[in-house]
Length: 505
Image (cartoon, rainbow, N blue to C red; front, side, top):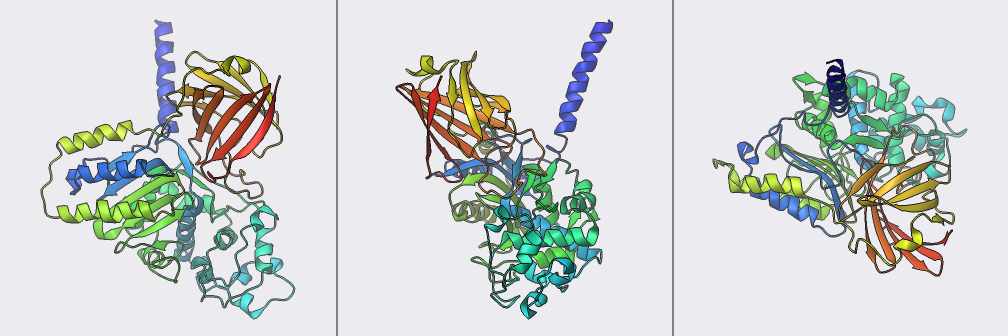
């Protein structure tokens, strides 16, 4: 009896642990698209088109209308519990933090930036530098020429930014710059005594049960602001819904309606349709978005009461994806206006498809001519940016296991599935498309890689997606006379292939 109780207790604790770990997914209400005036067929068409778009790996899509999720996909090996790095979509959350600080009378958008950092100013302060305001930072019109390499070259980012020449009159010329947003994060920290993330947790995230959220931290101990937010897709959908509802969540005004309106409307001539306070105007009437590299979006469409979250790794400029939304989904909603829709066969097809999407697995055979040559052998790498020192391949029951030793001495096993994706925990951090100093500071692991393989004669192809990040590696191992020619490309510079000659012992 006692043994049965112990087993039951362990089972319950495991269940509770899993529930607590992923407590913030499946919290938004779900319903059929037809209940919210949307034909299921329109969502199926959207999802099919996104998943099949060339040069694009879709990681998640969530579509909400009238406050309810009406469609969502997480193509395997991605899943709703995995967080995702947001690149410049992070900027819109910085604007929200500034808005809360303005609401609390901690700062004004007319405040001069130089006044916040008197100890870090250059000896000679130009009139142009002295005139830069918080509003100029919000609208990307600081007048300072962007220096995208700065974050990889020095550790004193605020001081270095303030030492840059002001080449345009502040407030007039749009020049997109992630370091401008970093300055906003630094100002928020200066006036609140809390990091940007701490401040958002206290004033925004805690009210929305957004608990699994991290943000990269600069060498100065400031959240990077212009990039670096690491968060789940459903949490982004919550943020988008709060944004759509004028700063209100569960009846509580978290950000003033006035700020939401200001940040969402055109404030500068940036992009094709205008730039707000760290937000982008869109082609579709009333639509506004947070927008990050490789295709990270939170799209808010007040005209149709719609919120869309999209995470991906894409080589497009985002216009094809947004075109599918404007010309496909939104047009279908407009055409269905006033029609009583009933969930039928189209909804059943949508429901099945949402569960079946999968990123393409590697072509090839289960075993190849080079298999016997590598099993149990140590493959030594030359110096590389991925931190790989050596690899040993072992044959698993239903996998090919790649035991990776990194240059820092850490070791982990990456399982490779045949015709399917297998996921394992990695050591350290995934590859990144940018290289700021100490970029992984502030991020909490573990991180996971999902991989598959296939043989083409004596060539092993293996792809790895880092499922709670964004990046992927595409590897080819070609066996020649006791050596291996390893080719590695990735989803953020796919046309660039790096080759290494590896020794086999």
